[in-house]
Length: 100
Image 1 (cartoon, rainbow, N blue to C red):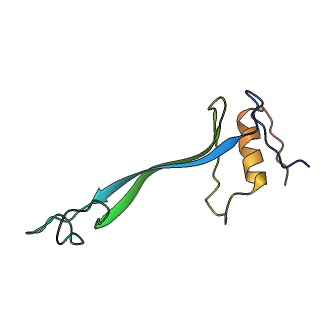
Image 2: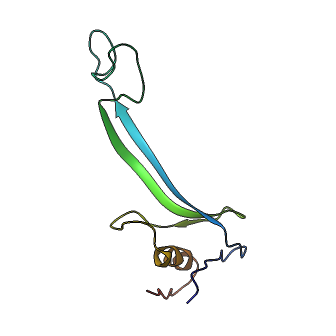
Image 3: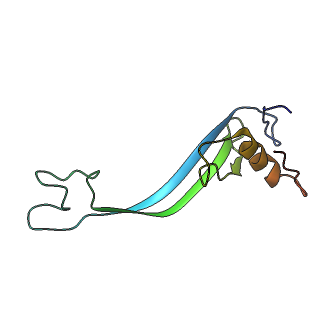
């Protein structure tokens, strides 16, 4: 079995794995600065709480920019070739056959 994946739209074999997330950052307001972590000056990376409100994981073809949904972080210790191959096949076949 080949470990190479190709885009079913354009035939390209170069992909980027992307994780896109949206967060709400909270800063407690006190008398001298926003956030209990900000003492001398406001630094936006010193927040009191961060809540993830949305996320997407996908493979993106470098050539045609087609996106293929892929859960490559959930329950795994990295990205396996089988997971990537399943992501490409599942969106573009009526009855996908997953190998592995």
